[in-house]
Image (tube, rainbow, N blue to C red; front, side, top):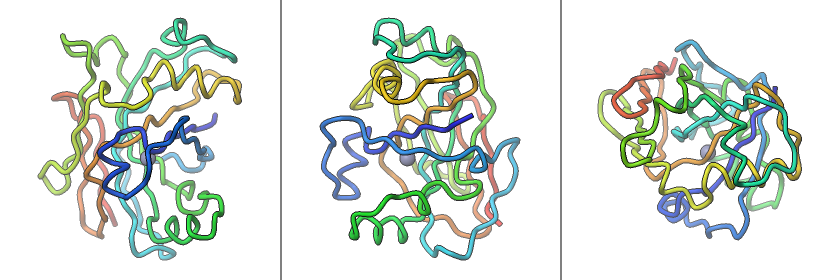
Length: 204
Ligand code: ZN
């Protein structure tokens, strides 16, 4: 199983970090050891003093495919949840300055928190959007809609499948809306898809 992540897929988030909007999707990956699920606590590692939460829609691939056309992409995923792409922003800034890869800032153990998956058909609101949000200590800090993505879910599936064969069980993190911020020991993060809470993660 692999985890494919998309960076800068919401204009307001790219702007809050002073990043340009990429011309093609920005892709990075996390190993399966990054997964944290079943509402387990996240233990803050010592190598960073500035880990940020990034709430994202996460799709689960349901059949193998490569070179998938956009019009058939929706047949390749059938479940969705919210996830948190934990990012060591201090390490990432340093790596970006040096022009180096991001892995240690993005792909460390338990940096890919995933909630409970639900069928994609249950996730859409009547207007065809998927709405999601993150609460930190009970207050909403991030809120987004699938329609705000710069590259749509189906276009992302098509794009990444040009480079990587998608396999059943692979996860796609689709980018974060604005409102990313630092986590501290004692924080409680709760991820919602619409009104439904699918993720809870205490920071220890
Ligand atoms: Zn992210």
